[in-house]
Amino acid sequence: MSSAPSRQVLVFRHLPSEHLGRIAEPLEIARIPFQYQDLYLNPASHVSLENAAGLIFLGGPMSANDNLDFIRRELDILEAGIRAGLPVLGVCLGAQLIARTLGERVYPNRVKEIGWAPVFWTSDACGDRLFSGLETPETVFHWHGETFDLPAGAEWLAWSAACRNQAFRYGAKVWGLQFHLEVTAEMISEWCRQDAQCGDRRELTTPLDPNAHAGRLDQLAGLVFGRWAELLP
Image (cartoon, rainbow, N blue to C red; front, side, top):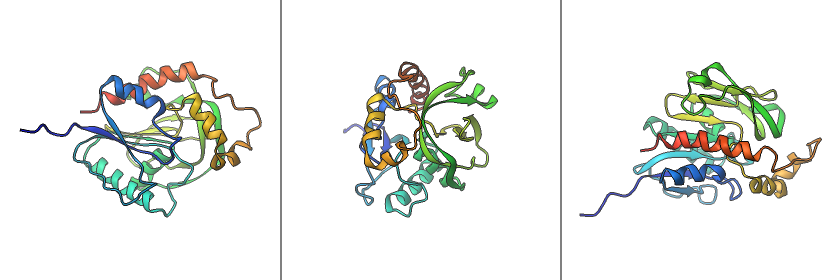
């Protein structure tokens, strides 16, 4: 008798440079396999949730509002995954896609938030499975020009001076993070080199150090993404 296919995390990537980064190690420690789903290259690719342990939607320079085939596919997959009760994690664009799936607006933030800046935790974060124990502000990495309205029924978990909705949880298994805990110094350097990002980077008033706060970011990523991995069957 053949064994059943192993369950794995489906990771929806929107550029090669916007990969799992620091999320990969907690998954590997938990022995959870993952597979990239690059629908931006082939929107018609078959995606099955039958053996999905969870879903991760990463960032990208496009908008959740763009009328693109792969964006529409991902919104449909998100809706199906949430309905099926799968653990879901969205980062930056991924968080905005979750908000859209849950019926909320995605729109330009009042400023582009780029670089290292603190996030502040709400009272609901104290009891959250991913963020409990984080009571003081933490300096994390940001790179976004859009934001979203908090989905109805969601718990608001974090904010920054430049953007109110930095993290939320919907139900027991769906998280959206506007900020980037997953980035490595190499990823930040690559983003700065890419033509798609250079227009944003020129708006910076101070140099961007990819290594700033990297040690603490590594600790935070291990904690938060390790806790998310514990939800996976």
